[in-house]
Image (cartoon, rainbow over all chains, first blue to last red; front, side, top):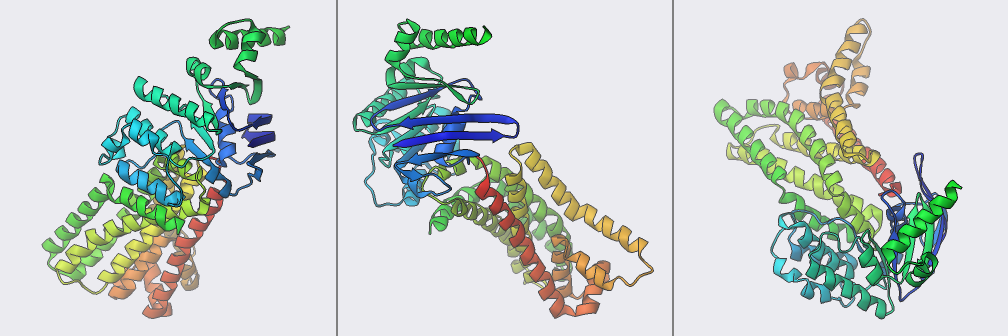
Length: 240
Length: 257
């Protein structure tokens, strides 16, 4: 579904991605983790075409990502921060997205109903709280039923009830055979949602394993301890 | 088509922004005040000219830069959709320029119309609209060239200060140094290097007040006559609106968000 080959990206002297190669298939939730500045957002932005890589290739559904925009009709994206113009009403934002992406497909309005987005219809984006904006953002990301869904910190700022609704939606989409890629700092969330965890550090893939593999490799029984133990082990061996 | 669809929502957003409303009201009050107290609409046009030449570029370039940085996340969201980059750029640029031009035209135009208008009123508004498009374009150029918001605003302020203040000082110094040479042709060429000068010439040629035109305008009128001077000014104003926009679009197309 998504193939990334030898991706490199440098911002001035800072190497954000150092020869990253990955492959993502349909029907999985993939979590990309790592500290700030590890390259995870740059990787997502390369897939979305927001950042142009210095070297390497990305294929989305066999389509070579090379400055074209057509391939993005397969993708639903939720950014980390609310991104809609402050003076637009919620209903205008929804019709804007429908207008821009074309009114030819059927919409997945599950989250609009479950997250009670319609109740905010006449409010301007600027008057909403951070959590309310995120509810609008998540509803918009799933609206088009794209077969690839990319969510940057999907539950950050959401209240527990909305967060649970979004998590259930992610699992439901995976079960429909879609590919969901999330970035998150919340280990418990990653543990409950993802099938595969990619940990990035300084622009490289530090490890790329399923949860079960991580438990086995580290000898720990929860993800937080497993990740900490693997990082310590690797740092220790690097020092030696 | 896609550009027009995005443009509609950019206009909805910008026209509701407090800054545009305040800008329109402020221009309205200033224009109304000047015309009402002076009673002579023709003289008011000249007073308004000085305000237009100073305020319109400043508001356009600063509001344009702030708008660009504030819309960064929105543009990222649009860029993640099946839309070409150039559609997003044109929609943002046209939306902002049109909204600012509308605010300006209402703010200045209504008081002028209320008092019956005057020679030069139309050209005053035309120059203001040109300056709005030009300085919004320069704002976008400064913004795409700088990832950091404060650097972008800083560069915009420098551009405005250069065009509105420093340029005239440099020209005066040059004329003083080379005063023993014939400078007519040089004056005309130098005027084309600054859109604020071109806008001033465009209005003053129409008003036929050569005493107020300064050296550049007087030479231009003498050299070309009003009609050709106007075509010359408008042609270069058009170039000033198009060139930075195309340059900004080129950078925008290659930019990393």
